[in-house]
Length: 242
Ligand SMILES: Nc1ncnc2c1ncn2[C@@H]1O[C@H](COP(=O)(O)OP(=O)(O)O)[C@@H](O)[C@H]1O
Ligand SMILES: [Mg+2]
Image 1 (cartoon, rainbow, N blue to C red):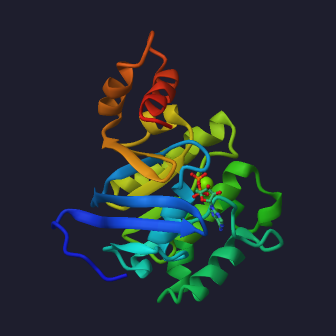
Image 2: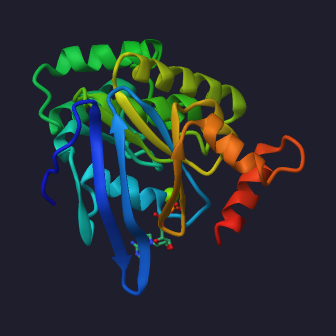
């Protein structure tokens, strides 16, 4: 993939991405731009292509057509399944991944992430013994060690209880407010509505909508029978043939 020219504000520009798995088209001619410091939700039902899209942006998977403006080295990747070692402590995991990422000052990066992810008092604990919420913050901290301009999170809250979710969104919101561009996927419409500046709606590999949560709400509202955003969203997808 070759870089494409983008406007100054764009942290990430995606142009005409198509991805096929055999006969199946997982993404069809998807294009969008994301501004620096934006907090963006990619929402859509299971199988919509969310993970495929984020993996291509992260440089883990390759597209069959199209281009991504941001080189993978500028992108932090937080997979849905934590890719950390459960037998190592929080600090040991952070040190290991900082070295793998060739971070210049390993000690400083580890200390920064322990503070930022609010894990300093858990630094010596085995990751396998942590709660789901703490484990997920370790997973995210690993993705942030190299201080990427853009961080991608695949379904970051899907395995968390409501209290852990609140804490996770506090952490992610702070990242964005400090200027990191954050893109996450979710199948939870309410979550996208609450915790995003902008939403991208994917269904069956097609980008159906991009706009603010409010704009999506007013689009979906036309399908609503009474204030239930999720039901309206499902009707919106249905109306668009999905
Ligand atoms: N490695 C793969 N091989 C074959 N098909 C795949 C592979 N990964 C994803 N798919 C298919 O591509 C489509 C999009 O999948 P995915 O990106 O995982 O969607 P989502 O994350 O929105 O649930 C689905 O139909 C899925 O079955
Ligand atoms: Mg997925």
